[in-house]
Length: 206
Image (tube, rainbow, N blue to C red; front, side, top):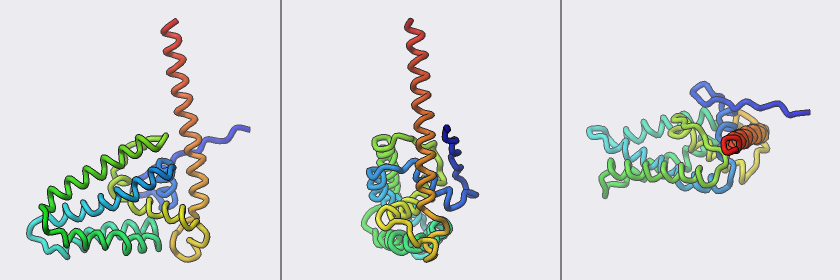
C-alpha cells in the first residue's frame, strides 16, 4: 500500500510550536547544517543587538531590554521552558556583549556581521541540505535561533520528559518522525521532477 503524502506545515504567526519545529526539521536535517547554525545564528543575534544599539537618543539598557523581550517572548512561546533556557544562555549574554562593544561603530559592525551570518547560513543550506526552503522571513529572522536550540537539545539529550517537565508543549520525537516523512515526500517529488525534465530533454534530442 502506498504511503499517503504528508503535507508540509505552513510557517506564519499562527503556526503552532509543534508545526514550527517540524517545519524547521524538514530543512535542517544534517548535523553539518546544525553546526553551521550553532555558529552563525548567535552572530546574527549579536548583530541585531548592535544595530538596535546604534539608534541614537535611547539608553542602551532600554534598547537591550526591548530587543531581549521581543526575542525572549517569541522564544518562550515556541520553546516554553527551553525558550527560557535559550534566553538565559544565549539572548541575554549576547545583549550584554553588544552593550560592551564600544570600540567600533555599532551600525556598520552590526550590518556587516548580519550579512556575514546570513550569507554563511545560506551557503550552508546550499552545501549541506538536499531540500532548499522557500524564503520565509519570520522563520529566518525570528524563529530559527530558538528552533535550532531545541533541535540541538533534542540531538544531545533526546525528547523524553520534556513535556512533563514543562520544557516543551509538544512531543519532539513525534515531530521528528513526521518531519522525516515529509522530507521523503519532498525528495521523491524533486526526483520525479528531475526525471520528467530529463525525459523531456531526451525527447527533444530525438
